[in-house]
Amino acid sequence: MRHLIDIRELSVEEIDELIATACDIIENPARYSEKCRGKKLATLFFEPSTRTRLSFEAAMYELGGNVIGFSEAQSSSAAKGESVADTARTISCYADIIAMRHPKEGAPYVASLASSIPVINAGDGGHNHPTQTLTDLLTIYREKGHLNDLTIGFCGDLKFGRTVHSLINAMSRYSGIKIVLISPEELKLPSYVKKDVLEKCGIPYVQTTDLEAAMPDLDILYMTRVQRERFFNEEDYLRLKDSYILDPKKLTNAKPDLRIMHPLPRVNEISTAVDSDPRACYFRQVLNGKYIRMALILKLLEEAAK
Ligand code: CP
Image (cartoon, rainbow, N blue to C red):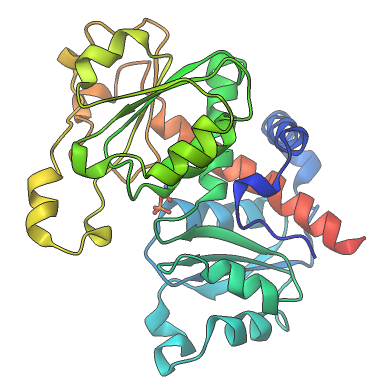
């Protein structure tokens, strides 16, 4: 049974195929509107979500399928102490595919071991968020026309940011990629990502605390939220939460074809005054999330049927 727990489980060729399918869905939605007739997606969300859960649900409905699930642990039998493995085994009796978000790293992997249907990791703690990465890759492809030869700046919480870890993993497999890591000292990218991904793949990278100094070199600026829910200490969160606030003035020296991305939700890190800048593509990114999830559901269900 094929699952998607970590973006590295997909080859570059498979990612390119998913992007091609998503682009075809965008061009020809009617061709896909019955593809999942009679199939059910279970969305098992043990942690809050707006985009991921609802884009999965919209994706399944637009493929002609149905959706069951829960949006918080408290409304499931997890509140009575049921394990993730037993939950996955149970849902395998009711649905054809699972999308699971969980605050604990590795929980979707544990679910995949017990499940007899495909499990998609919809975000596990500070670890991975592979469908956000697919969303980001589709967005970069649609905005820039290619995934090679790009300088990408990641800004904000690079320590706990699972979307950052997953996207760095994915982009490290393309050629001509340079990475600029912009964060406060306390929220630097973990050394295991630097060593096991960037250094292993020979990706040039620099670390800085200065967003404005880095700006002129960037083709993509990937902003992130400082995540209150990952901090052990409220004082640290309050001290670091407004480390970077992108506003029109900070974009003065940016390239005219820069693209500003953000996985959302945002809090303060991008001023709403930036939203009308044509280089801001975070709401186009949200829409891409539905199309790439449609492509992924189709792929995993097709493979499960073999
Ligand atoms: N980007 C993202 O994962 O958003 P949600 O938390 O709203 O799903």
